[in-house]
Length: 340
Figure 1 (cartoon, rainbow, N blue to C red):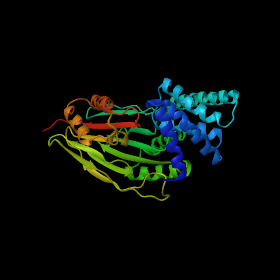
Figure 2 (tube, rainbow, N blue to C red; figure 1 turned 90 degrees about the vertical axis):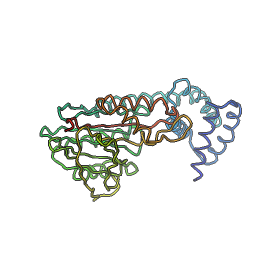
Figure 3 (cartoon, helix red, strand yellow; figure 1 turned 135 degrees about the vertical axis):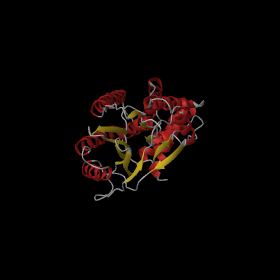
Figure 4 (cartoon, rainbow, N blue to C red; figure 1 turned 45 degrees about the vertical axis):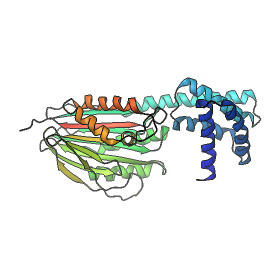
């Protein structure tokens, strides 16, 4: 762990102690030592404010009263810099402006990334995508080719905030531009170029890309370092993991992506998700057992996919640690043809 990591963790511990601990006075006392440390390393007050905002986001603190209470700690730190009350108020105004900017970014993202779920006689689709904070790093898209073919993708940006929202908007534009005539491997190859050329070099994107032919029931799929998807085999009551080799988008200029295919039987379901599902933290801070998610799918398998994903989401929210939230996306496609 680096010296900077220690600084960040120390400040996070102070905030947690003040907000959730019983010894708030101890947290205030620790502010003095922390202030001396950051002043010694020539950190600016603006950097401390930015760190405070980032830690509130990382800790999933969105409740207005808790955010307001946390400012007591920030005030103690800023006072050590010799700032006047006027300067302090100015920085509080910047915090409010930041919140408004995030509201605007959230609204723009909701509008620009909105995806319509088509309806078919031969298949049913359900999807849910819920951000942990105002701006999501998850994304899903569906393209109806109008010729018996359907493209779909689920993606996760390794990054946060407004840059992640911009990256997702670019990916949607790219997918909408290329997706009507491309196989998954070709689509990922082209999207990789979009990300590599236009997105911040420290931001990468994982994506599972599928093309489903509902006239032949064949699924073609590729992956850019994304979570393996699942196929639920209805007749056998078994889950099959599907994955394909490929690096995350934006890492390698001339990346190539493996493409595979599999048959989707009557009532079988394709399930694609982000790590907000697989790495969900429970109230006791342990990770969820993914077998529990599979059991939820089994229990609701005869319902419409939209009802299934909603049921899973609500079940997960009941057991999730509210302070350890992550963006969560779940996509489910069911072959609606009858068993012979």
